[in-house]
Length: 201
Image (cartoon, rainbow, N blue to C red; front, side, top):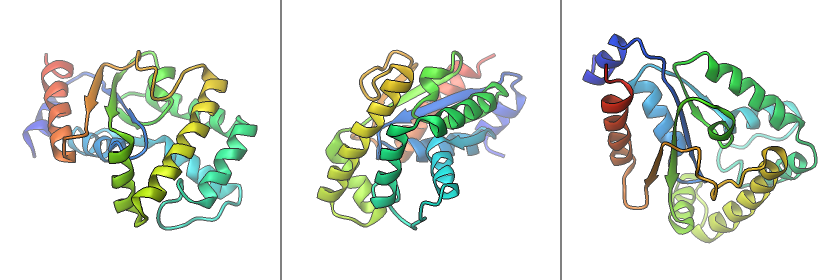
């Protein structure tokens, strides 16, 4: 068992961690590593929304769903009707309140009163390069897609909850610039804070 897992296992504290950042910032990778290292349950708002879209009849694709045609069509529907977003966020709030969770979410940092909240900062160009590599598309297409996606998403959350995704950083305990950090370096930095601040007796 790793040193961190031993430390987590000996702590009576209940952890609630929210990881947030725009597409390609590394939030899902970081959240999953935190969950694995500290034996926390992991929930993804994006995955939950995509699952709801599949239930509504949207086609699934192996790569780049959110930046593709189906994901963009779903975004437009969500902008017209916020019911699915509200249902998902209510469920995520219930799960977060049970404790010992990591949330990869664009809404929980604003909706949850408690928790350690992390914002990952990265330039649009760097994020587009990461998405291009992940989804096997050009960096130009990735940048166009994430720009459209983020504008649509900002509109949804502004209407629903009144916050400006990507600009309003008041809820966050930690703002980490990932432009010049590898995924492992970002993870190591966050672990130092969790070990020495959140889990210290």
